[in-house]
Image (cartoon, rainbow over all chains, first blue to last red; front, top):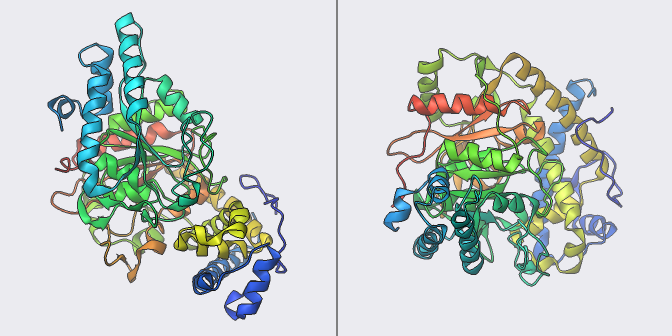
Length: 75
Length: 448
C-alpha cells in the first residue's frame, strides 16, 4: 500500500516482533526482553501499568487488523 | 475582576479599545494579572505567570498607539499558552517536572511570534497533562486543573489549563494543542469555543511535539468572533466567508457512544436547518484504534532516550503508556498509518457530499475528579481512556474542527464538533454563527 498523508516511520526499531503482536500472552521476562531490545530497563514499579497498557494496545491492533482485512488491505 | 476588564472581556473588544486609545494595554494587563492571582487558587490552570514580560509587552503596545502606529488586531489582548510553547528565556516544560531545569528557549515559538506581532500580550503558562499524553489534565507535579463550571470536576485535557483559564474568565484567549482531541475535549467539558486546525494550518515550530503527524495548535475563546480573529492571526490570512448548505449529523459510533442529552441539542439544530441526514463514516472504531496505536508508538519513541535514562522521573501514568508504546513494533504502526490514509480518503469523500459534519465532542459531561467515570451509550467507562473517543477518529482524518459549546442553561457544558474539509473552514464559522444566533450554541454566563 502506498502512503499519501501519513509517512512510514523511519525511527530505529529494534523490536523482535513484526505483525504478530499478542503481548497479553507475554511473560514478564518477555516484556523485559522486548524493552531491553529498545534500550529500556523496566523498573518493577512500571510492570503492572505497562502490562495494562500493552493489553489495550493489543486490543487496538486487533481492531485495526480486522479493519484492514475487511477493506481488502487497500489504501 | 476590575470594571475595566469586565467591560472588555472579549479579545475583539479589548483590541478595539486599545487600538482606539480608549484603554491602555498596561491597565488591561494589570487587571488580568490581579484576576489570575485571585481566581487560579480554585482552578489551578496556571503554571507560571509572566508578569514582567506581560507589562513590558503591554507598555510597548501602548507606546505604539501613542506614536500613531497600529499595534495589530490583537492589540493589548492578554493570552495564555499551554506549557508546550517555547517562550524565550524560559524552559519549555511540556508539563514535565523533569524539564523544569531544562535550558531556556532561545526564542519564542513561531505561533507566539505571530501573535505578539499582532499585539498580543502573553501573561501565563498554562497547565497540561505531562507531554500532552492524556485527556484529563491530572499532572503529578503541577496538580489537577479543576473545571471552572464545577470545581469538583475535571477540566479535560490535555490543554485543560487553557480551556479552564478561558472558562473561568481569567483570560479572553488561550492557546493549546490537539493531537487526539486535546483542544476539543477540554473545550467541551469547560463550555468554551475551540478550534483544531487542519494539520499544518498553524506553524508548529517551537512547540514541544507529541505525535508530529497528528499534532496541531489552536485557540480557546469565550466568543465565536474571538475564535475567528485568533485563527486568522494564527493562519496569517483571513478565513474566507462561505455559506454552509449541506450539513449532516455523523451517525453510528458518534451516536452510539454519546449520552442522550446530545439528541436534545440536535433537535435545536434541526429546528433551524430542518431534519439532518445521518452520514456514516466507515470503520470509525478502527480509526480511533489506529490513532491510539500511532500515538503510543510515536510518542513512546520520542521519549525513548529519557525513558532509558530516568524512567522514574516521569509522571507514572504517562511513563507506563510511553513504555508500552515503545514495545509496539514499527510495522504495526506503519500499517495503522496506512489505514489512516484509507480513512482520510473516506472522510474527504463524505465531505464532497456534505459540507459540514456534526458530532458530539465528548461522550459525556465533565466527570468528577474523585470518580473519573463517564457514561457512554454502552454504560460507564474510565474517563482517562475514553474522553477522546469521539475526537480521536477525526484527528486521524486530519480535518479542521470547530469545537462549539452547546447552550445548556443550568447544566454542565457539552460541546459539538463541526467538521469540514481543509481549506473550507469558513463553512464551519458560518454554520456556528447561525447556530449561535438561534440560541443553540454559545458560552454560558461567565463563572463567578
